[in-house]
Image 1 (spheres, rainbow, N blue to C red):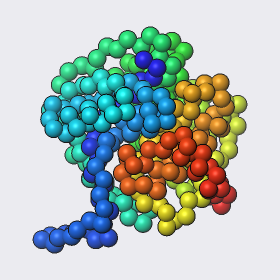
Image 2 (cartoon, rainbow, N blue to C red; image 1 turned 180 degrees about the vertical axis):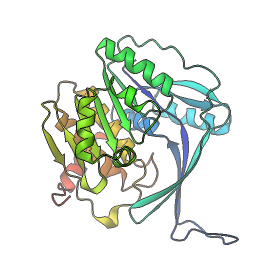
Image 3 (spheres, one colour; image 1 turned 135 degrees about the vertical axis):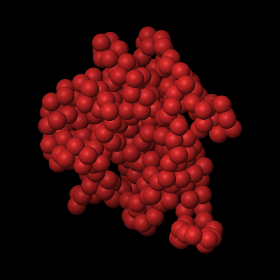
Image 4 (cartoon, one colour; image 1 turned 90 degrees about the horizontal axis):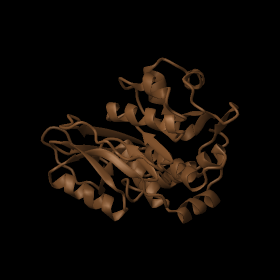
Length: 299
């Protein structure tokens, strides 16, 4: 096992439509995509596409959607350690005007305890806060072993405060700032106070406000993707996390500015494609994105 990602599996159904029907109305979507979903799950697929296939501890149901998900993981050579649930979880995503509405149906009633995995030789752990018991267990285990731990802090969960004391790299969303009534700058202070070595707040078009290995706070501006090329922003953050994990695993001695710049290009690729799978960049895609779009210095 080279790396372990822990999360919750969704099957994402993304619909591109100019009109959302209500009541007895009907409409035909302009386009659609069906793909894997979930924060750490999508990050795992992104990491695999970029050259490092992590092990994935995630929810799996014994139904046709669950079997479809396992087929997807096999395609990317991702070893799945399933934690059984009764039904697969679904997300219905409607991108529009640079934003996206999401309706979820989730089963996170795990039927068994999380599996005990052999983490000998593991080099990194990535979490999104789902499976809070497993997340805390493996974060502690990896911290004791000196293994890099990463958290996608998309929102406040029951164990967020406790979990952060075992996290090296915490990249959190503006939503977490709002839930904790903190400004982005205050959030950085909070993350530093919890012992994170690298911390940041992702702010969409404004890029990432973050602090580096030396504690220096700066802004990594987003790339200036023309608005008419933005199709689907859903999953961009997940691809960002998967890409910086891939960059670290491929070059653990590298600076975090380089890892995050690599991830920035990955998320710029994602937003130009409908659905998660179509939005997974290759190494060549990331190089091309870096050449096409300058940093948005006005962000």
